[in-house]
Amino acid sequence: MHKTGVSLNRRQFLKSTIGAGAVLMIPQVIPGTVLGKDGGVAPSERIVMAGLGIGNRGGYDLGCFLHEPDAQFVTICDVRADNRKRAKDAVDTRYGNKDCTTCIDMNEMLARSDIDAVLIATGPNWHATASIIAAKAGKDVYCEKPCTKNIAQSLALAEVFRRTGRVFQAGTQRRSLPNFMFAIDLARRGKLGKLQTLYAHPAGLGTSTSGWLPAEPEPSKDKVDWDLYLGPAAWRPYNGKLLDGFNFEKGGGMVGGGCLEWGSHCVDLCQWANDADNTAPVEYEPKGDQLHARYANGVKLIVRNDGWLPLGSCPVRFEGDKGWVQTGDDAEIVASSPDLLIGKGAKIAGYPADFHIRNFLDRVRSRGQTRANADVACWAHIACHAANVSLFLNRKVNFDPKKCEFIGDEEANRLRSEAIRDPWRL
Image 1 (cartoon, helix red, strand yellow):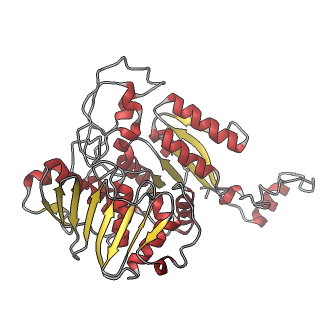
Image 2: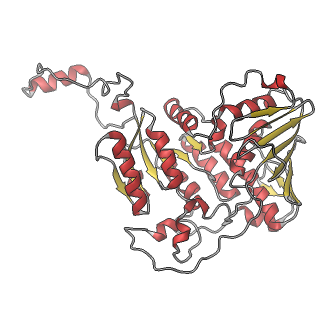
């Protein structure tokens, strides 16, 4: 996967070296791992990678990538010095050297022609913008969720990756876990009969703006580049509590994120079960402590916190007119009939990202579509953003997936996008 400017065939190489008086017959011992033997991958076959925004979640993702023999990290970019050091140490320890470089500005990283792909695990305020910039720079992208902050960003993300032909994987790793895949397969193959209702868990349905915390003295830029940390998000004074980017600017400036946080996992799985990866529900309405939505094909989507079997976090439930199935992060699957569970396979609990990362690396090689490609992520996030708009306005909204706008609703349509700070408008 390395990009080189010059290549010589064997005859040209022999001619040039012999002409220069080179001695060719000196025996050399080359480790088998360098040649791709003994489970190793030859350097020319490795996917050269960079990490952007490698904090808590990014550190976990990085560890999963480092387990893969055909992925090689060469640089870490982060606006925080502590994150840069921690991630560099992890990479250097894995490879047994000190070769991993670091930088603060992602433009420096993206200018490198040897980098094939980028792991993006910044705060959500950066996810879409950084992914789009990376694609335009010719890089493939694995991006943590939520991948976008609003409907407009979702559409822009899909359009750029479609146009550039780069590979994208949203970090919705449950799309690659056996228990969720098995339950979804039951729904898609009609084993539950005609689908009636899909249930998703949001981990909280409240929405609120991120606001400002009290100003604190701003650190030096080499320790924390606060302006770069904010990036496209609205400016606010520095406060150390905002450095947990996982809880910063989730969707339209909303901290709670409503349906977006777990929704970008659970609603995404419901989309897949309903064969709706290229669309979104057409109606959304808050009902008590639930959010009810309806697809054009009549299938209902209910986002709720309560009423679940004890099957771990991130549960989903699919109901048809002949049966139902439910699963969650403990990897157990419960169904209305034992016959539905025949062939369910091994139990893998704990929602690991390894399978999802492997799917990404395989598609980087084949140039095929990942399980959570940019179009899939676009529509799953649009469904969550539209639900958040309904929650924020506290009323029913009607959505046209073909036009990607709310029908006859100026107030809701204003919430499809938001102001972006210069120079990060795309």
